Image (cartoon, rainbow over all chains, first blue to last red):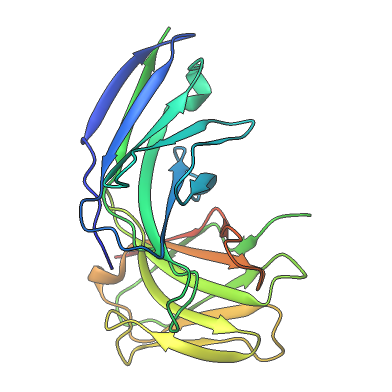
Length: 114
Length: 114
């Protein structure tokens, strides 16, 4: 599986936008970019995913570079409840083995200051 | 949608004892995954079921570990002759067959081996 690189940690102020970067220079054409987050003492939670085009949902936006070698998860207005570890993961939708399996890295720990 | 349920939430056991964890996936999800997570790390894939068939096992799943999903609904993960290194959070996730469908995680079972 192609790997991703994320900063270990980031800080944000409450009610300000947060841009969480992810590098995936070895991404293949069939890899989708998935983001999950994990709040303290909980299992990971799906945030968003995309292939080539930018994506928006009620939780966040995903901006994907034109060459697809990097992406950015955007939280438009951070709240204290957004403090979590954010994982950027590549998933090959055509992989014939454990389709849907996610390979997690260490993610980015986001702290939100009031 | 009641979410993925895991039981128990916490388990403390003595080294050498056997333990069993249960996972109840979301009812219409035919794919079920087990992960293990240690402190400061992202979840690591252990094994995967499609309906009742166990289709893939990670090298992390030693012969002391066994997972079942007898009727394609709930699943159990058993660890025999526990070791201190087995102390971790054990996470279960499920998803549908539809392409790109996200994984839904439970809140895990935290195992402490003393």
